[in-house]
Image (tube, rainbow, N blue to C red):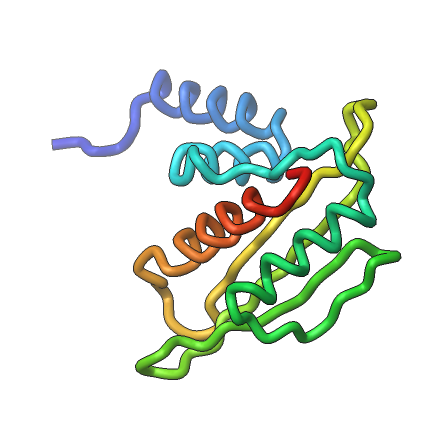
Length: 141
């Protein structure tokens, strides 16, 4: 029994590889994110970036996160949160910038990442959802 791919199968593989190569890594990362977490997306607001930054920082502080760094000029907030039982530390990064779509206001992005382990059991996604919900209670968001 010959299990080697046929010339037609090899050509199909090459064609698919060439097609996929036309899209950058960012495209595939976004696609994976949208499929896995369709409800998690940047927050858009009509607030100026400095005001949106203040609201984003207030929401992070309100959740009890440890603020490691915040720079309003760069629009970045870095924070950590440790798990209650095991003490694992997760890193959180928030970016606030002017909207790139020509509309007035700001775009707020958040990322949460576990330092330890291979799987976070949904903790980071839950953290992002919790922060986004808290942010949306802030005036003007």
